[in-house]
Length: 301
Image: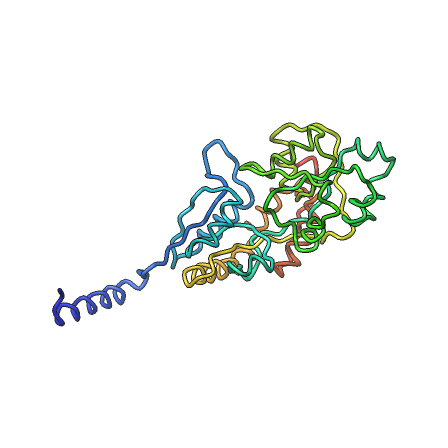
């Protein structure tokens, strides 16, 4: 047991060390749950690249990356006190067990309805006509329409509420598992479903990776927001509050840097780059512009 003199010495020693070396602090640690691990033969996703830019600038906390499934990450948020996850919609339900960054981690063009050309031809409807419909219109008007969804995923309150209606239950084909999002896109490519809702960079990445050559149209439905945002979520605890404060502070800085925008642009198909820029500037209060070469198909293979 330490004597009072020894205890005073320990306190003094710690104080002296921190005075001599102000950069040393009693760092708080947290887990940042990631769906994938980086590897030499894998291109990092937008989530991973923006995460790394955020973490590179945080000095008063340490974060350890841990791999888990998307669904399990949300469970861990509720069970643990020091967990953070990337790029999530922040809704009323998740606010009960998590804290969100003050700014989004990512912003992307809004969810598109990716629908089979075969479905459009079968019902003799043009994509431009589909764009005049709401999701409710679509599910009601076409009784044999099969919409693929991802188990446990939030598509935003309005869409979630619509999908939860009993009248639509038989139209929804739900996919679960570790490859949920990719699996639904593969289902569309093999024509097991008629359509799905997805963000352009995710859909295009999987389509290219899996060499999906099925004729598919991207449609903006009437009731879906123009752009989507994903926040960093951390545990609703003292530890989570410290983590989300550090992340939010860094986000305010890094989102003003061109490198952060470039990550967003590099994830976009060429046809979405101008749209991406417009939403980025709106969300983050920036005034970036594109060089003509950046939006030219000839220079974006």
